[in-house]
Length: 207
Image 1 (cartoon, rainbow, N blue to C red):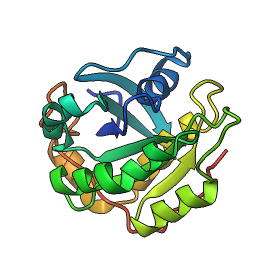
Image 2: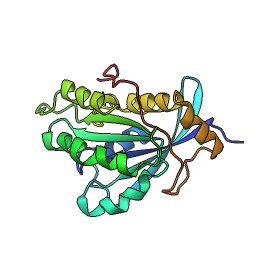
Image 3: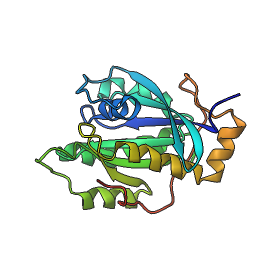
């Protein structure tokens, strides 16, 4: 018998160097490492309890480099949630969410309900180029959740995944598909999906 109630697939995407791998490592192992850019796709598995529900998360960390983009497109299939990460100290990485990453999520996601969360990472840096208000506004325009984080200090990292999972659990179509498919979180890129958020973006979990 499984030791969890649900299995969800979560994809992290965004430009190279914004800290996707560091966020994932902080979430799964609670350590910080300024890791080298991901080559292709990697994944980690983490068990999490949210509102009394035991959830197994398979989190896929994608490369942000242009030359790997065709490789990662298949990994959007079946994702219950997508975490779109930018660096608050680099405006270009934020602008690319609207021009590159959000359109890509909308194009390749296989379910219209996929939950999207925008994460402004590297909150610990002093040279901020993107305000919290800018991040929140982008999230609201695109029906996404919003949070700011620092993989270095761990601020906002666990809250990011908890809030994402909570929204998935609150979306009946997604939980129904997860149960019917045995959870949809396996070691294969073609997993079953969950869905997009029509709840307004919230900055309640910003740190």
